[in-house]
Each structure stands twice: as structure tokens, then as C-alpha cells.
Length: 421
Image (cartoon, rainbow, N blue to C red):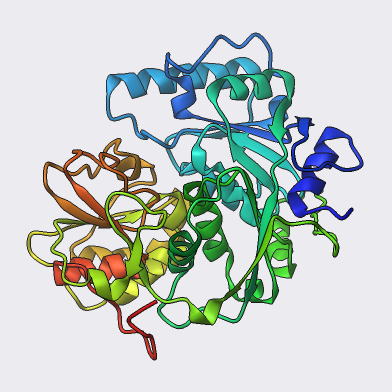
């Protein structure tokens, strides 16, 4: 019986010839990524050994720089851990900081065919690199760091076969919202993405979709390894890797074909995503007080480019706060070099340092009672970004930028786009 991508990766990591859905597998972890939240007292336990320091990375991202005493103490504990065990892959406040999943991408940490764990739910972002990446709980992180191993239950896989090309003005965020609205939850399943349409999606677009797979409730989300991916990885690492491809006779729970050319701009309505998306036209006109562009899913260079193109020569509407958070300092520097940051700031945006920040309701952009926000970040559930009475709409970064200028949810001209979907 043929194997899917994730089945091949897990079989290799478990030292087995094959695995099937329902199997419980004990696997070797290629990289365990600890973030600042791991070092809070509620999560951290004294570590007496580290199985392989070269297979551990520490990245401060959620509350960075520290906005309060608790965060500062967590950072201190994390720095002591790094020093004690000689961890070399460290991303503290400074030049190399960023949201963990962006740093993983930029540094080539999520190797094709490998297993990566982190306790953040959006760890599946590294699946864009043909990596088996999953967010796990704090006890599992301690186990992964101290023993170099963890376990998974092998789930059945749903494959998305992509064809065509996204229309002008349509982003990977729209593709995700399209699928979330059409198919709803993917709980208890893996997602595999491939097909001829994959070649038209850049790495930032793939990362956006893979990151947002967490909101579909899937276990793993893995992409096929095409030439674009291989070139991307080889430009960032000299570590050896073995990408995995599905067998021609791989067994899937379901095969779903998506014509990218049929995707249209969409918006997730408050206070959920699954089965709760609408065509952009249905949300147009909703007044807003805040617009947010950022997060591990949509703080990419592509997102900042899209926003800058919309905002060029325009101003953010009075009474609207536009907050832009690049996903890493490297993205920030490149956007600065290309002129995107100047365009955003001239329009009236506040550009923050790289951090999870407002996306997770930690700092730099929380909402007050009764406010409405449109965001291109990861979640829109009640209380996610501040007061529970605030409402959060979700859309692409281009739509968020256009809405900031209009003072209400607004679209970007899309040639030949239909209003309904």
C-alpha cells in the first residue's frame, strides 16, 4: 500500500518501513523549538539534561521585548537555559529576532523530510517546507528536549490537488478562507498539498496557508517538495535533507481538487472562521477602528508589499489605527530597503518590531470594548485581541490596508472578479 508524505516522514523518524492511520509511533525529533512562553513558571520544569543541544532552538517571540515583569523573568530563565546547555540556535531581542515560524523559515530550520516540534499551535507553518511540524504541549516539549523523541498518532490524510493560478488581487489568505468556508473542520486528519498549481505559489504564500491549517484543526499540513522549495532551502542551509513525495498509489481519506483561478477574496466574520466566511462584498461597508497586518501567517515580505501597494499615496482614515508587525527583523530590514516601511508610515501606519504582539492579545495593539478590527493575523475568536466584546474580521493584507484607508471594510479592485463565491 502506498504512503502519503506525512506517513513516509513519520515512518523514517520511527525507524519503520511504513505506517498506517491509527498507528502510534515513537519518533526521533530533528528539531525542538522552545519559545518564550515555555519559560513561564506554569510551563517550565527544571531540565536535568538535553539530549542533543544541536537539535534545540530557542526563539523569544510572543512577548518580545518584554512588556511586563513576568515576561522579563521568563526571558531570564530562557537565557539561563541557553547558557547552561550550550544552545547555539538562539534568537533573542535584537537583529535575529522574529516570530518563531518566520525564523524557522528564514534559517532553513524546518528541513524537508524532518520532524519539528514547538508548543505553539501554528508550528504547522513549517509544513510548507515538506516538514512534519506540529505544535505539542509543554510536557511533550520537555520530553523532546530531554530525550530527543516524541510520539504521534498517525491520522488519515486529506489531499488538496491544486490547479491553475490565483487571480490578480487574490492572496493565499483568500485560498485558506475559501477552503475553511467550503469544507470546515479537518479535525483528526492531516492535510497534504500538491498538484500543478503549487508551482504558482511563492514560499510566503505557501507558509500563509500552512500556518493557517492550524485553524482547520488538522494534525499535520505538508506540502510537496518541488524545485522552488528545494532552491529555497539550499539557499538557507547546508544541512543534508531528504524530501518526501507521496507514492502514486497513496491512500487518502479524500482527494479534493481546487482550481486556484476560481478563488475570490473572502472575509471571516466574527467570532470564528470555520464555516463562517463570506465573500468580501458581503462585508464591505462595516466600520472599523483598527486594522492589523502581521503574525506568523501574514507578516511576510509579500504581505508588506501588498499593503504598501494599496497605501501608496493614500492616508489611513481618521479614527482608524493601522498597526503593521513584520514577522521578523529580517523582513523588517528588507521591507525598509525596498521602501515599503516608508510607504506604510507615510500613510499613517505604526510599524512595530517583530513579535506575536497584537495577534495573540499580548501587547502593541489590543482592542477595547465594542471596537471592530479587521486583521490578516491568525485568529478572530472572541477576546483573542483584547476585550471580549470587540469584533474581529479576517481578510488578506491587501484588504486590511484598503479598509484602513476607507475607515470601513473595503475591497481592492480585482479585474474580472465576481462578487459572490
